[in-house]
Image 1: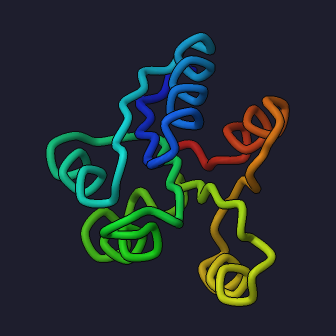
Image 2 (image 1 turned 60 degrees about the horizontal axis):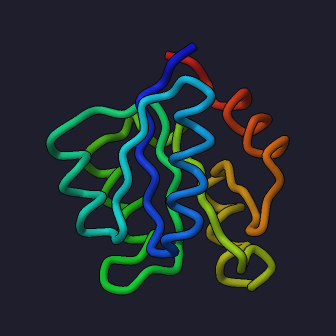
Length: 122
């Protein structure tokens, strides 16, 4: 199934990798490099899946997720958090409290495929 995906990550190498792989898998992918750009994308378009980095300059991922909960509630269950800090108590608490899907950086392509399969379909 083809999905419209928004990748939000300020690390260019990760954003490019995700766009390349997900496009190769048949998805339509757009990239935002910070939280403000992500919100702007979501105000203009709808997405089936959102990959959201937590640690970004400016509007960081937790604030973007709060915006999604307030403005695009239908995207909450299809948001996947990307973080290398999943063991930090504050991040682990956020992930547990929100019961949100996440991928720990660095991740394998098999893990990426598995997380996409785990996203509830509308």
